[in-house]
Image 1: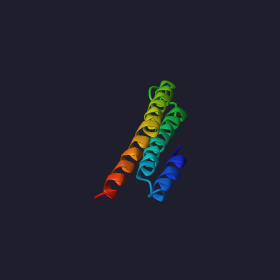
Image 2: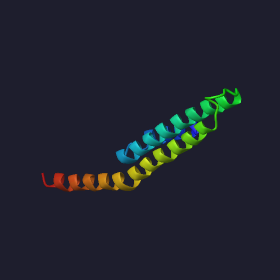
Image 3: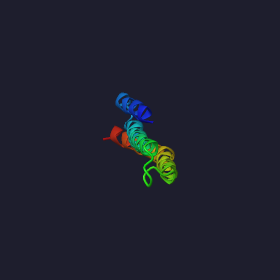
Image 4: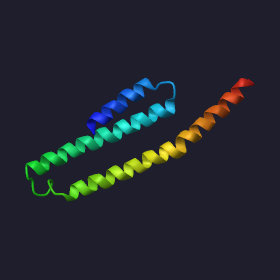
Length: 98
């Protein structure tokens, strides 16, 4: 997951033409990097057999957090990006006459 986060970071740098897509890639970087780091910590704690922190309940909470965060990103992709593009087109049309 950390590797995917780094890939999304490079994609956000390369997609400077469309700021909405660049922002989406930055959000994806944050999600994958954070969840990857937390996942590595959970694996380490389980490997070391630490009683409370190495419990499998944390994996379930981690998975629920990942799914909820992904839901917010899907909402951003489906609702916010088209809305932002419409606003940008509207501004372009208005700027044409000024």
